[in-house]
Image 1 (cartoon, rainbow, N blue to C red):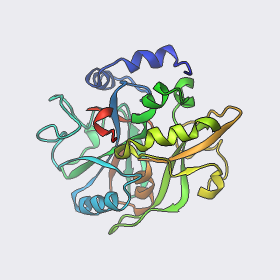
Image 2: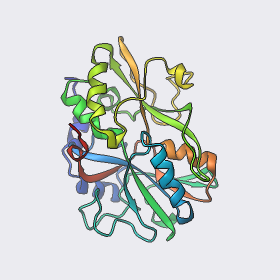
Image 3: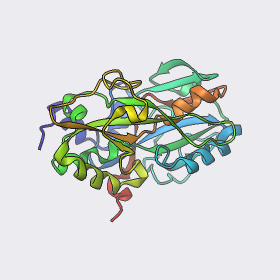
Length: 274
Protein backbone atom coordinates (compact mmCIF):
# COMPACT_ATOMS: atom_id res chain seq x y z
CA UNK A 1 0.00 0.00 0.00
CA UNK A 2 1.27 3.48 -0.84
CA UNK A 3 2.34 5.37 2.29
CA UNK A 4 0.21 8.23 3.58
CA UNK A 5 2.08 11.27 4.89
CA UNK A 6 2.13 11.66 8.71
CA UNK A 7 0.03 14.84 8.54
CA UNK A 8 -2.64 13.06 6.52
CA UNK A 9 -2.60 10.13 8.93
CA UNK A 10 -3.13 12.50 11.88
CA UNK A 11 -6.16 14.23 10.39
CA UNK A 12 -7.48 10.89 9.17
CA UNK A 13 -7.97 9.84 12.79
CA UNK A 14 -10.09 12.88 13.70
CA UNK A 15 -13.83 12.68 14.32
CA UNK A 16 -16.00 14.87 12.07
CA UNK A 17 -16.99 17.12 14.98
CA UNK A 18 -13.32 17.60 15.92
CA UNK A 19 -12.46 18.48 12.30
CA UNK A 20 -15.33 20.95 12.07
CA UNK A 21 -14.23 22.53 15.36
CA UNK A 22 -10.74 23.01 13.94
CA UNK A 23 -12.18 24.68 10.85
CA UNK A 24 -14.38 26.93 12.97
CA UNK A 25 -11.26 27.89 14.93
CA UNK A 26 -9.47 28.95 11.75
CA UNK A 27 -7.65 25.93 10.32
CA UNK A 28 -7.69 25.88 6.51
CA UNK A 29 -6.82 22.86 4.36
CA UNK A 30 -8.24 20.63 1.63
CA UNK A 31 -10.06 17.77 3.32
CA UNK A 32 -8.88 14.79 1.25
CA UNK A 33 -7.70 12.21 3.77
CA UNK A 34 -9.51 13.73 6.76
CA UNK A 35 -11.75 11.70 9.10
CA UNK A 36 -11.28 8.19 7.79
CA UNK A 37 -14.55 6.28 7.63
CA UNK A 38 -16.81 9.33 7.26
CA UNK A 39 -18.51 10.72 4.18
CA UNK A 40 -17.57 14.10 2.77
CA UNK A 41 -19.81 16.38 0.76
CA UNK A 42 -19.97 19.38 -1.56
CA UNK A 43 -22.41 22.18 -0.83
CA UNK A 44 -24.20 24.83 -2.83
CA UNK A 45 -26.64 27.33 -1.31
CA UNK A 46 -29.00 29.13 -3.69
CA UNK A 47 -31.94 31.52 -3.26
CA UNK A 48 -35.23 29.78 -2.50
CA UNK A 49 -36.64 30.86 -5.88
CA UNK A 50 -34.08 28.54 -7.55
CA UNK A 51 -34.43 25.62 -5.12
CA UNK A 52 -36.85 23.65 -7.29
CA UNK A 53 -34.66 24.13 -10.36
CA UNK A 54 -31.67 22.88 -8.36
CA UNK A 55 -33.59 19.83 -7.16
CA UNK A 56 -34.47 18.99 -10.75
CA UNK A 57 -30.90 19.69 -11.91
CA UNK A 58 -29.62 17.18 -9.34
CA UNK A 59 -32.27 14.62 -10.30
CA UNK A 60 -31.37 14.92 -13.98
CA UNK A 61 -27.62 14.81 -13.31
CA UNK A 62 -27.16 12.22 -10.54
CA UNK A 63 -23.51 11.43 -11.33
CA UNK A 64 -22.12 14.91 -10.57
CA UNK A 65 -24.94 15.87 -8.18
CA UNK A 66 -25.85 12.91 -5.94
CA UNK A 67 -28.03 14.67 -3.40
CA UNK A 68 -27.52 13.64 0.25
CA UNK A 69 -29.50 16.33 2.09
CA UNK A 70 -31.33 19.64 1.68
CA UNK A 71 -31.27 22.30 4.39
CA UNK A 72 -34.29 24.60 4.23
CA UNK A 73 -34.12 28.37 3.91
CA UNK A 74 -33.59 30.03 7.27
CA UNK A 75 -31.85 26.97 8.72
CA UNK A 76 -28.15 26.19 9.18
CA UNK A 77 -28.66 22.44 9.70
CA UNK A 78 -31.52 20.03 9.06
CA UNK A 79 -34.16 20.22 11.83
CA UNK A 80 -33.70 16.58 12.82
CA UNK A 81 -30.04 16.35 11.83
CA UNK A 82 -31.08 14.74 8.57
CA UNK A 83 -28.87 12.06 7.11
CA UNK A 84 -25.55 13.88 7.46
CA UNK A 85 -25.53 15.59 10.90
CA UNK A 86 -25.68 14.20 14.41
CA UNK A 87 -23.83 17.07 16.12
CA UNK A 88 -26.39 19.60 17.42
CA UNK A 89 -23.74 22.31 17.15
CA UNK A 90 -23.39 21.93 13.38
CA UNK A 91 -23.69 25.14 11.38
CA UNK A 92 -23.36 24.94 7.60
CA UNK A 93 -22.03 28.52 7.57
CA UNK A 94 -18.93 27.60 9.63
CA UNK A 95 -18.44 23.83 9.30
CA UNK A 96 -16.28 23.95 6.15
CA UNK A 97 -12.66 25.12 5.96
CA UNK A 98 -13.33 27.52 3.08
CA UNK A 99 -16.26 28.88 1.06
CA UNK A 100 -16.76 30.60 -2.26
CA UNK A 101 -19.28 33.40 -2.79
CA UNK A 102 -20.58 34.01 -6.32
CA UNK A 103 -22.54 37.12 -7.28
CA UNK A 104 -24.27 37.21 -10.67
CA UNK A 105 -22.17 34.24 -11.73
CA UNK A 106 -18.83 35.82 -10.85
CA UNK A 107 -16.58 34.57 -8.06
CA UNK A 108 -16.70 37.57 -5.72
CA UNK A 109 -14.71 36.28 -2.75
CA UNK A 110 -13.51 33.31 -0.75
CA UNK A 111 -14.26 33.34 2.98
CA UNK A 112 -13.40 31.16 5.95
CA UNK A 113 -16.75 31.77 7.64
CA UNK A 114 -19.87 32.32 5.52
CA UNK A 115 -21.99 33.81 8.33
CA UNK A 116 -21.49 37.38 7.16
CA UNK A 117 -22.61 36.61 3.58
CA UNK A 118 -25.44 34.23 4.43
CA UNK A 119 -29.03 35.15 3.57
CA UNK A 120 -32.22 33.90 5.17
CA UNK A 121 -33.58 32.79 1.78
CA UNK A 122 -30.69 30.44 0.98
CA UNK A 123 -31.49 26.74 0.56
CA UNK A 124 -28.45 24.49 0.96
CA UNK A 125 -27.90 21.35 -1.11
CA UNK A 126 -25.48 18.77 0.28
CA UNK A 127 -23.98 16.68 -2.52
CA UNK A 128 -21.87 13.52 -2.24
CA UNK A 129 -18.09 13.78 -2.72
CA UNK A 130 -15.61 11.28 -4.14
CA UNK A 131 -13.21 11.90 -1.22
CA UNK A 132 -15.52 9.46 0.58
CA UNK A 133 -14.21 6.44 -1.34
CA UNK A 134 -10.53 7.40 -1.26
CA UNK A 135 -9.84 5.56 2.00
CA UNK A 136 -11.47 2.37 0.64
CA UNK A 137 -9.25 2.69 -2.44
CA UNK A 138 -6.16 3.02 -0.22
CA UNK A 139 -7.27 0.11 1.94
CA UNK A 140 -7.41 -2.04 -1.20
CA UNK A 141 -3.90 -0.98 -2.19
CA UNK A 142 -5.01 1.37 -4.98
CA UNK A 143 -2.84 4.51 -4.79
CA UNK A 144 -4.45 7.92 -4.40
CA UNK A 145 -1.57 10.08 -5.59
CA UNK A 146 -2.79 13.55 -4.58
CA UNK A 147 -3.62 12.37 -1.05
CA UNK A 148 -0.20 10.83 -0.39
CA UNK A 149 1.48 13.89 -1.93
CA UNK A 150 -0.50 16.27 0.30
CA UNK A 151 -2.19 17.98 -2.65
CA UNK A 152 -5.72 18.84 -3.64
CA UNK A 153 -7.33 16.66 -6.32
CA UNK A 154 -7.23 18.12 -9.87
CA UNK A 155 -10.62 19.03 -11.36
CA UNK A 156 -11.50 19.99 -14.94
CA UNK A 157 -14.42 21.53 -16.80
CA UNK A 158 -15.33 19.28 -19.71
CA UNK A 159 -17.02 19.74 -23.06
CA UNK A 160 -19.89 17.50 -21.92
CA UNK A 161 -23.13 19.24 -21.06
CA UNK A 162 -25.32 18.51 -18.08
CA UNK A 163 -29.05 18.28 -18.58
CA UNK A 164 -30.53 21.72 -17.86
CA UNK A 165 -33.32 22.46 -15.39
CA UNK A 166 -35.28 25.69 -15.54
CA UNK A 167 -32.79 28.56 -15.31
CA UNK A 168 -29.85 26.27 -14.47
CA UNK A 169 -27.44 24.90 -17.07
CA UNK A 170 -23.74 24.19 -17.38
CA UNK A 171 -20.95 21.73 -18.20
CA UNK A 172 -19.87 18.58 -16.39
CA UNK A 173 -16.83 18.95 -14.12
CA UNK A 174 -14.69 15.90 -13.37
CA UNK A 175 -11.98 15.02 -10.87
CA UNK A 176 -9.00 12.96 -12.03
CA UNK A 177 -6.84 10.39 -10.31
CA UNK A 178 -3.89 8.66 -11.93
CA UNK A 179 -4.32 4.92 -11.40
CA UNK A 180 -1.79 2.20 -12.35
CA UNK A 181 -3.11 0.42 -15.41
CA UNK A 182 -3.31 -2.92 -13.62
CA UNK A 183 -5.46 -1.39 -10.82
CA UNK A 184 -7.97 0.54 -12.94
CA UNK A 185 -10.51 -2.29 -12.80
CA UNK A 186 -10.21 -2.34 -9.00
CA UNK A 187 -10.71 1.44 -8.80
CA UNK A 188 -13.83 1.14 -10.96
CA UNK A 189 -15.17 -1.77 -8.91
CA UNK A 190 -14.59 -0.12 -5.53
CA UNK A 191 -15.91 3.33 -6.44
CA UNK A 192 -18.95 1.85 -8.20
CA UNK A 193 -20.14 0.60 -4.81
CA UNK A 194 -20.55 4.22 -3.64
CA UNK A 195 -23.15 5.62 -6.06
CA UNK A 196 -24.23 8.33 -3.59
CA UNK A 197 -20.74 9.88 -3.79
CA UNK A 198 -20.36 9.84 -7.61
CA UNK A 199 -19.85 6.09 -8.01
CA UNK A 200 -17.90 4.64 -10.93
CA UNK A 201 -15.78 6.81 -13.24
CA UNK A 202 -17.37 8.55 -16.20
CA UNK A 203 -14.26 8.11 -18.36
CA UNK A 204 -10.96 6.24 -18.42
CA UNK A 205 -8.03 7.26 -20.61
CA UNK A 206 -7.76 10.01 -23.23
CA UNK A 207 -8.60 13.39 -21.63
CA UNK A 208 -9.23 14.82 -25.09
CA UNK A 209 -12.45 12.83 -25.27
CA UNK A 210 -13.76 15.10 -22.51
CA UNK A 211 -12.44 18.27 -24.14
CA UNK A 212 -9.52 18.51 -21.67
CA UNK A 213 -6.47 19.79 -23.53
CA UNK A 214 -3.85 19.74 -20.76
CA UNK A 215 -3.92 17.64 -17.60
CA UNK A 216 -1.22 19.82 -16.03
CA UNK A 217 -3.57 22.83 -16.02
CA UNK A 218 -6.66 21.87 -14.02
CA UNK A 219 -9.50 24.38 -13.68
CA UNK A 220 -9.70 23.68 -9.94
CA UNK A 221 -7.38 22.06 -7.42
CA UNK A 222 -3.71 21.23 -7.92
CA UNK A 223 -1.81 19.79 -10.91
CA UNK A 224 -1.97 16.00 -10.94
CA UNK A 225 0.60 13.55 -9.66
CA UNK A 226 1.11 10.90 -12.35
CA UNK A 227 3.60 8.04 -12.20
CA UNK A 228 4.87 6.01 -15.13
CA UNK A 229 2.21 3.51 -16.12
CA UNK A 230 -0.65 5.51 -14.61
CA UNK A 231 -3.90 5.88 -16.55
CA UNK A 232 -5.99 9.04 -16.02
CA UNK A 233 -9.35 8.06 -14.54
CA UNK A 234 -12.13 10.66 -14.35
CA UNK A 235 -15.03 10.81 -11.92
CA UNK A 236 -18.02 13.16 -12.07
CA UNK A 237 -17.40 15.98 -9.60
CA UNK A 238 -19.53 18.01 -7.20
CA UNK A 239 -17.88 21.22 -8.41
CA UNK A 240 -20.24 20.89 -11.40
CA UNK A 241 -22.82 23.17 -9.69
CA UNK A 242 -20.17 25.91 -9.49
CA UNK A 243 -19.64 25.73 -13.26
CA UNK A 244 -23.44 25.86 -13.56
CA UNK A 245 -23.52 29.00 -11.39
CA UNK A 246 -20.94 30.71 -13.61
CA UNK A 247 -23.08 30.03 -16.67
CA UNK A 248 -26.54 30.55 -15.15
CA UNK A 249 -25.65 33.66 -13.12
CA UNK A 250 -27.94 33.59 -10.07
CA UNK A 251 -27.70 36.79 -8.03
CA UNK A 252 -25.92 34.90 -5.22
CA UNK A 253 -24.58 31.42 -4.53
CA UNK A 254 -22.45 30.15 -1.66
CA UNK A 255 -20.43 26.97 -2.21
CA UNK A 256 -17.50 25.06 -0.74
CA UNK A 257 -14.11 26.05 -2.11
CA UNK A 258 -13.05 23.16 -4.38
CA UNK A 259 -11.43 20.44 -2.28
CA UNK A 260 -12.52 22.05 1.01
CA UNK A 261 -15.48 19.86 1.82
CA UNK A 262 -18.16 19.40 4.44
CA UNK A 263 -17.14 16.44 6.62
CA UNK A 264 -20.40 14.82 7.64
CA UNK A 265 -21.35 12.61 10.57
CA UNK A 266 -22.49 9.89 8.16
CA UNK A 267 -20.28 6.82 7.81
CA UNK A 268 -18.92 6.08 4.35
CA UNK A 269 -20.31 2.57 4.85
CA UNK A 270 -23.81 4.12 4.95
CA UNK A 271 -23.43 4.72 1.21
CA UNK A 272 -21.86 1.38 0.35
CA UNK A 273 -24.00 -0.90 -1.83
CA UNK A 274 -23.44 -4.67 -2.27
